[in-house]
Length: 359
Ligand SMILES: NC(=O)c1ccc[n+]([C@@H]2O[C@H](COP(=O)([O-])OP(=O)(O)OC[C@H]3O[C@@H](n4cnc5c(N)ncnc54)[C@H](OP(=O)(O)O)[C@@H]3O)[C@@H](O)[C@H]2O)c1
Image (cartoon, rainbow, N blue to C red):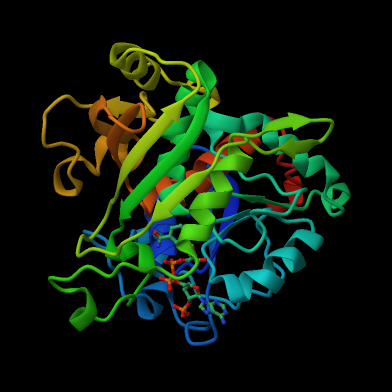
C-alpha cells in the first residue's frame, strides 16, 4: 500500500482476481519501484474487497496490502499511470485501447494486440529495442500506449532461440509442448479431463507459437519490425502439471556449431535487464543443466524465482542439428513476471510519463 512519502509508482492490475492477476499481486509485494494501488476485474467481483472476490490459488495468504483493496470495474478512470493487464482477450480488445486513450500505459499479457505492427511484443533480454515502436502509437502524446509480452510457451522458446539465432542463424524449428494446467487460468480445465490425462489440443496455441517468436526475433528497421525468417512447426499438449511448461525443441542451424558452442551461447546469454540490474531480472536468464533427467517442473520451475528458463538434455539430432528440452514458469516468466519486467524496462528507458498528481 502506498504511504504519503512513498515515491513508488502506483499501478493498477486489470484481471487482478485471475491466475495471472494473482501472480502480479504476489510479485508486486515489496516491489522497490511500483506499488499496487488499484485492482479491477469483472462485474462479478466489482465492489467486493480483493480478499472477498479472490479464490487465491498461490501458496500462502493474499498479501496484506492487497486484501482490503476494493475491486473496481475495468473501465473506470484509474488514478495509476500504469495498468498491468491479465484480462481475457475478449475484454482486453476494447478495454486496453480505451485505457491507453486515457493516457495510461497498458502492459498486457493478452493476445489481442501482440501482432499489431505498432505494438511492441517484448522479452526484455531479447528485443528491448522494440519498445521504440511505442512512439508510433496514436495515444503516445498523452503518455498512453500498449506494450505486450508473449504467449507463455513463446517466452521460453524465444529466450532459448535468441542466443542461438544470433550466434549461428536458425533455419528451422520443431517444438512439442507439455503445458501446465495453470496456463488455462482458474478454474481452467475440468478435473475429469485433466487428471491422469493428456489433451493434445489448446485452442489457438499452435498459431501463436508459430507466429510470435518471428516478431520477437525480428529486426527493427525504419520504425517497423522485419520478422525473422524461419519455419516453426508446433504440436501442443495440456498435461496434469500445476506450473511450468516443458518444451522439446529441435533446431536446424545455418552454421554447424559444436554442442559445447551451443551450450556456451545459451548459458552466457544476458540482456538489458541484467545490464540495468532491473529488480525482477534473474542473474541468469537461461540455466543449462547436464543431468540426464532435467529439467522437471517440480524441481526446476522456481529457478531464478521463476524468471530463469531451464534448458537440459542438450544433444545432437540425426535429422535436425541439435535438440533440447526447456522449462519455463508459465505464470511468472511466461506472464506476470514478464509484464513486470517490461514495466521496469519502460521505467529505465524513461518511457513512463508519470504525472506527479497521479502519485
Ligand atoms: N495463465 C497463464 O499462464 C497465462 C500466460 C500468459 C498469458 N495469459 C493470458 O492472460 C490473460 C489472463 O489469463 P488468466 O489465466 O489469468 O485467466 P483467468 O484466471 O481466467 O482470469 C481472468 C481475469 O479476467 C477477469 N475477467 C473475466 N471476464 C471479465 C469481464 N467481462 N470484464 C472484466 N474482467 C473480466 C476475471 O475477473 P473475475 O474473477 O471477476 O471473473 C479475472 O480477473 C488471458 O488473456 C491469457 O490468455 C495467461
